[in-house]
Amino acid sequence: MGTQPDVTTYTLERPDVDLVHDVRGPLPTVDGRPPLLMIGQPMCADGFEALAAEFPDRTVVTYDPRGLGRSTMRRDGRTDQDHEDQAADLHALVGHLGAGPVDLFASSGGALTALTWAATHPEDLVTVVAHEPPAMWALPDAEAIERASAEVATAYAEHGYGAGMAAFIRLTGWHGEFTEAYFAQPPIDPAEYGLPTEDDGSRDDPLLSKFSDGETASRPDLEALRSGPPRLVLAVGEETGHAITARTTRGVADELGLPVTMFPGHHGGFASAQGEWPGTSVEFGARLAEVLAGDASM
Image 1 (cartoon, helix red, strand yellow):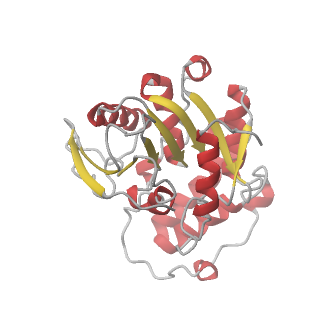
Image 2: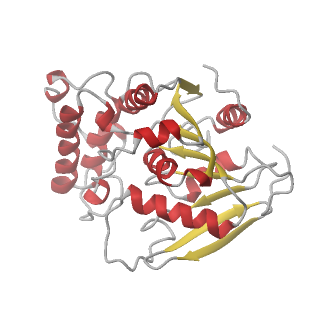
């Protein structure tokens, strides 16, 4: 890594939300390359610190999605998350930056938003790297996954964070189609994963609550994605195997007639090796740089 640029924080005031975002490097960019925007869901800007540090030669922009992190000032009276709203937020953010279209790295729920954004405002984007979008609509066992997801929601609603997160880990760690073998498993103990067994009474976790229910069922305009100008890259972690987000990514790639590009690590492979869920941010950053430069070979 080279010398890290200063980070400047700004707030974009929209009619129904204030969007807090961080800019690393100059705008407009010095070398003429587009800014590199990194987004996740329900991940905020701080989840990309390690990956952003791997691009000291690029102007990198990160942000907190509406209702999350520092962007909690919503004036629309809603708590749910909607990809169309978020795509509109990002369209406004790119206009606010005033630096032309951007390169985009988008992971998990952020990758779902990225597909909607690329379909609705393609002029904002140069290259879109969609990393493991959980697009349940792209799978033949979508109904069974909905059933499994309902079990996660029930565990959270009835027993709190530890039980809900344990059920979520079981769901996301299942490899292959969701058959009756999945549902026949014995009850899961949060302590097995080092999770709390006591219920603190809160029910506002952005991952486990119902705030994001509509996201994974949201299908973008596939024809607009096929014919639009942004270069689309569907990315999967080498360690994700046949878990649900690898399967959904391959399903989306098949729908769009695109290959799948492999990245180091797992679903959160871009995270720091020293984090709670250790990733491989150095190797991941090197691979992302290759892909942005045009090498999306397997």
